[in-house]
Length: 138
Length: 61
Image (cartoon, chains in turn green, cyan):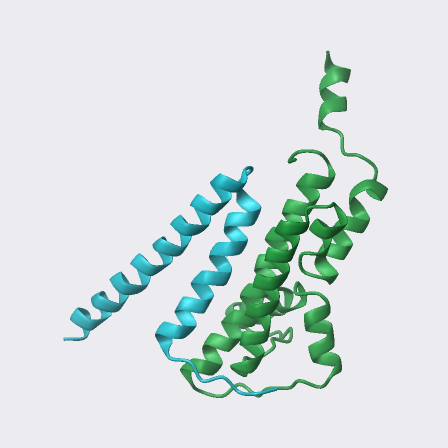
């Protein structure tokens, strides 16, 4: 009985879900496409990429990890993780030299939030891919 | 890349739209539930948007 329960909760090998999860991080919606969930993958790709591009067009700021007081560390490190979670969108943007200084203005502020939220939504998509790959979802 | 100047409403609309689509897609198990949840989330964003907008308007005096 205990062994049966353990077998039910044990994860499949990394080779089963690892590539889909990695692709899902690198290309938003890519993990779903790899797992043959084409419609959902395309919707995720369109939404997350559009949100990221809108953030860039609003000249949002990319966070970099900074140390200092607790709030500064939390905001900047959290924001950096959010930006980084967009995968290739973030990497391309940084490699192509996007460097927007932090200036006052509602549109810039919205842009910053769009960039971070795109990454956070991609994390949700990654969790979904993981669930599908290990068989918790169809 | 061209610069985009949006009003608060337009930015909040786009934010709500993209977020609702993703939340609908990743949280439910059937297409019908996904659609319903996506629309529900979008409406919730809008209720909050207008509710907070009016609250700030009256709170500001």
